[in-house]
Length: 320
Length: 273
Image (cartoon, rainbow over all chains, first blue to last red; front, top):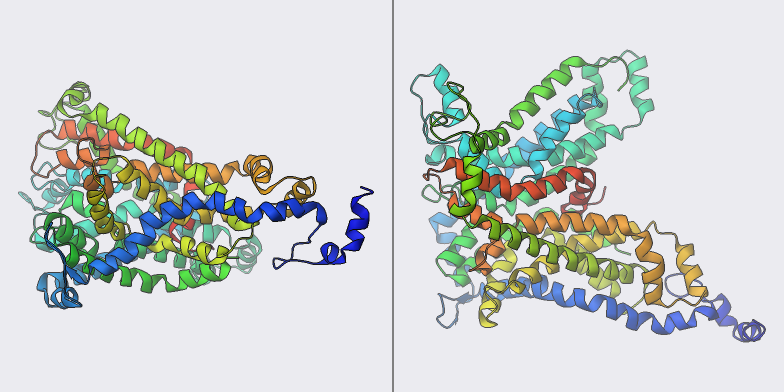
């Protein structure tokens, strides 16, 4: 102590100076400062290597491959924007874009509006509806592949399918192949994806409604507001931040959907249920057109980045 | 809520929730009733009996047990990898200064928006050239590497509320950066590390696309399930058992950790509130 004290006085910069992060620099922490950077690199090097291999490299390689014509193991041929030109002249791909749009908007609108409505209903009896919220949230914990399988059972094309049987009660002899008919296959998928995804918007919106200050609700109640007007004028506007998060998560989830399509329809019938995320798999992994598949992936990537702009700005600003 | 309980909302939500679990009930009942009874529908009660026949036969019909242990091993290894590397990196990003710190951080935490389709083609060609197809490293590397995009964000968020005084005290007492991590931060950050582990476990257990493409001889449960579940196959009883076996472990984990999962998936794919 007696030895370090004069040293502190002799080096006033060391006592009072603050580094860039505003941290007080004390001489006793000099050992820390010397070891800081090597220690940091030691801790993050494995992360950087793994992240580089599985995120950064694929990102740039997908972009690079999209400018080449690659079929199977044949040597790659540079085609510039050729793949993109072919892509947008391909009637199948244009149909895929439309399918993606319907699927993404359909699942998001259905699951978020249903989740939001249920969250507000639950807010009128938060304790008594706890088990029911749990039941609906559980479907969110079942993997997409298994959810799809469960619905194959309900949507069976013959009378052993529950949906056909229920409609058959009203229209005798009714039997519809829900997933075999191009007109109903996509909406069946949208419904199943919403079924499996509604738990998250429900929980997010319920948390948003619950976080409305009690005093606000009490004041409205004392002023004689009816439950419907409390819902309309207090709960709906004040839970919007939660709804916004739920919409964003659902949009991202629907754009990257693969499992549920693969299990339920395999993209069929006649490619009527292929989204861009499925199209790229089919072109690159079953037709082995790697460059063409990569170009489709880039289109998917652009869509994802566009809807993520607000989230990316927010995260980047918050990264200290 | 204020005032009396609105019973009509309880009833309404209850009815919807009951409808919601019917498909789940469907495969459980299908797996437990003899196929002859359910030929016209699993809900029919013309005759009713319970049999565990499908539950006994399925293990011989499909390589289900093998796939179960393989899935468990993959999920355990990937979870372990993420749980070991994430806290260390989050600590370095939050408490240590090093060149390019902020740039790397921004890159990693924004990668959460990327869909898994991005890795499919590049890693397929890379693993093919490196002869890693059918090696478990081919899926473990992307499982762990892609997890950092959300796991580091989650743990770093927790560290933002970590008392700085503890770190300063450790510094002054002569702790180096590594021993501070070991003795101060890790013992006090078990809850976010555990939450990261649960999320990673669920994600890797349920993964379908990457193992389907990069593994050949051994395949995890979701891939096996898709192989046996073409629409026009019979054996609904056997396949229902396979579906239940596929989902039972992650479902139990999910139910136990519901709360963390709701919080975690929010940071995983969404913005912080």
